[in-house]
Image 1: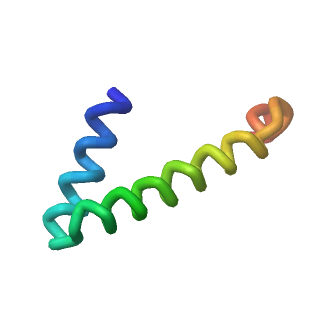
Image 2 (image 1 turned 180 degrees about the vertical axis):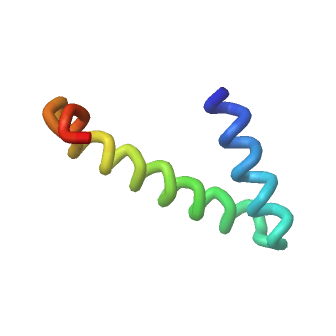
Length: 49
């Protein structure tokens, strides 16, 4: 499922006429940001919602 989401994100950016380098940079920033937020999450945070 993650691969399908990644492909969808890459194709969506390709439709905006970005070149491959821009797509890679954009996706790298997006997923590194998600990883950073995930690493900052504590188990107690899950129970707060």
